[in-house]
Image: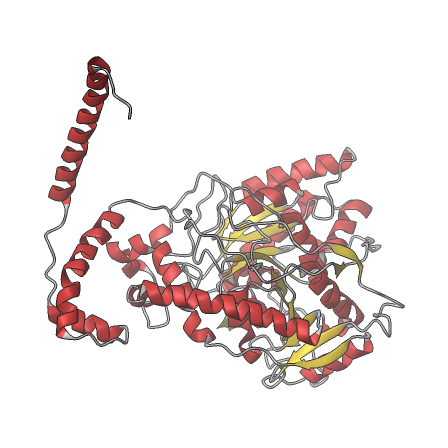
Length: 573
């Protein structure tokens, strides 16, 4: 036992007494600042029990009453501390849970060679060109990044009257970047194929010096003194940011505080969302490429409507630093492009671990080599298998043609049975996390400023989510773990490298947003022709965890072999 001398004891005791006095004063001040006690009676808990599907006896409720009343005070204490949207919970989520082993290797794209191009008389004729074609234009002709930037800015200004796809133009920043990229190329400094390519970013991602509105009226003038990591990585790759593109308010749908974003194929139709402007502007040839985000379909859905190619990466492959948080365990950032080959180029620039995002990481599956090829098709006998889930082609015409095209490439298509889970119920994950991310918005009443005030919109969802019990949220996460294990086991049992299916078939969109698997969407035109508005149909491919490069290599080769799928909207001059 340690015995302190009297003087030393006094020296120790004095600060302790002062600390205790300060704590007592703070406790008194906190108590005085507390709102008046809310009444809570036995009947209230009986109703609450029915809301969560439990029946309590009166005796059980009497025992609980003091505890629940205490919880109300604890809730107030939690709410007294402001928490910014970019503060993530302590627990991190990874698709690589215990029990899953990364594959030894994956296939990737072959080395890319620039095509030979010529400068057209009208520079707008290149508006729909792919990234390699635009890159060749900058290196093989007299066209400069500044000229490309001015051309795309002019198209955005002209067509936004119809599309409503732009929230903020970043023209000054863009022209400074373009001039710098032109000088670098003239001096022999080449940052890669994205060097000098104009692009747009979904306005969930912060860019210092410009507003970041999240598409929502309460944040219309919000400025964040930080630039998102993905924007900085594309800056480093030489790309030229020309616009912050529209986003459905707080990442739902295509309605934002300014308008409703439209499809370039039909100005009367919404673009879907929430990566509304990213898909609309890319499909309209207003940017070289764009970035979107997905939590539950926000890359896939507008890409289906606008007929763009896109990658929704494996969860964690791309940093969300500087990106609005909606669901910390489901949010993903990915490219929306005109070809899957373009998506691969953008993904290469933005993917990888970022210390500022605890959920981000490098890919766990190395690229072992290019996809086997002979005369442009997969080698016969390679036994590269693609799974076809039950009901995968039920809802769309012409998808059987995709099967035939893949088989002609040498792939073996096999049926696969996927695990059945209450996926819709498990999506309380998103509702609860989103309600937490925008807790202040709901409690302050500022959610009344959002344009959409209907059942299927955030204000109502945030309010209803307050009644999701913490126990049920955690049960959903436990089921989610089982789903992740069973889904990977199904892919292993069938020995498939990917799945092919209609975008919304077999519940795969929701399921794989929970498991974190990557998906690629790509437009195609069946023999029967396009949709009534002239737009192509869309096919989805779901890949193995961290095999994003392999998935894009498969779909990019299919696209290259079938250029008849290339189609662009006719737009006003």
